Length: 106
Length: 106
DNA sequence: TCCATCTGTCAGCCTTTTCTTACGGGTGCT
DNA sequence: AGCACCCGTAAGAAAAGGCTGACAGATGGA
Image (cartoon, rainbow over the protein chains, first blue to last red):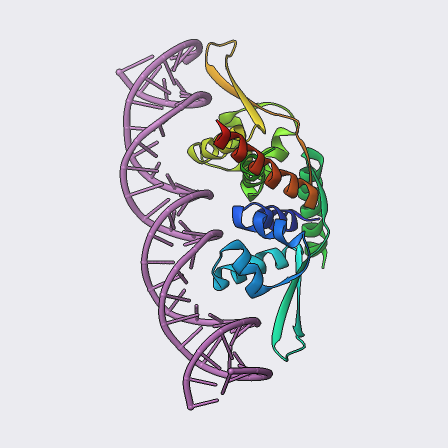
């Protein structure tokens, strides 16, 4: 895990609304509009947060057609597990250097 | 751990410069000016980041007098270990609710 | 046709965070 | 006195992030 990936993860989780989103999604998959209603968020705002969560790999969305023919985007939580300590940070920084070296060789 | 505390921790770690600060401090305690030089940061900027890290409890500073009588502020890393997964998030959200109930009773 | 529901995006505002420049103070050595 | 080093803070610019409101397209049912 590079520091960039680690930062994306930390930034994704590190926000009140996104914490709430994760909390709600832990109860099961929901489609976007319903999720927005439950959390009291505007849909555009929710989209923004979901994009961030998706980029960090914490959440996945699938577009489905409901029985009455309407398009529904269902969001579900991706299991994640990161141990947050000094070693993790050092490992990320080290991996950055290794990538940099690999790039300069190429 | 409340969500507020969790967020403070995530925000504190979740920044490129602060990741580098942690990485450097992992090598041992350093005084502020020296740390700034090593990382190529301006001292005021470093102060800002250290303040954030300190509030989250990741770092501790002690003002000491060096042998030649100059004031030196040494910074050292505080060990930390947080497991970052869905359960941690749920636990934080749950603790928020418990606190809220406790407050409303009082 | 009109209404309710869903999807998605864009422009712009406001707040927070990050960063620089410029100060103030102190010590000891030449 | 002047210089090198240390401490600390304040003001303001710059950038990033969060949020709202308006819009466009699609479906199904009254």
